[in-house]
Length: 109
Image 1 (cartoon, rainbow, N blue to C red):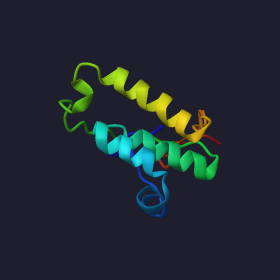
Image 2 (image 1 turned 45 degrees about the vertical axis):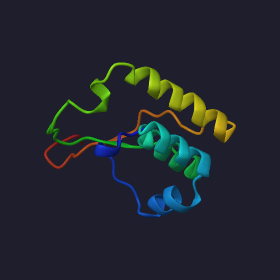
Image 3 (image 1 turned 45 degrees about the horizontal axis):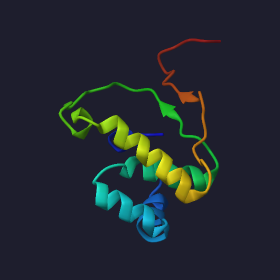
């Protein structure tokens, strides 16, 4: 699963999210004002059957006062996971340990 502020993906997934995702998931996200990143992760995993790839890079934290700092946030996110899995009828997320690392300054031969 990938947080929206740290992700990049093909634009076709934006079209899938907007025009083809089951409407009850979009309604859930809009009503709860949360979990759009989980909905996108479910959508992409369901469409591809593939896990995300972590790409290592420099991290520049731009703040930590978002909704994740609110009380009950973890519980809400857990509810989203369980609700979306029930709506899809299965858990489409795929576990992985794959990552892409910039090796231009590394010598590993």
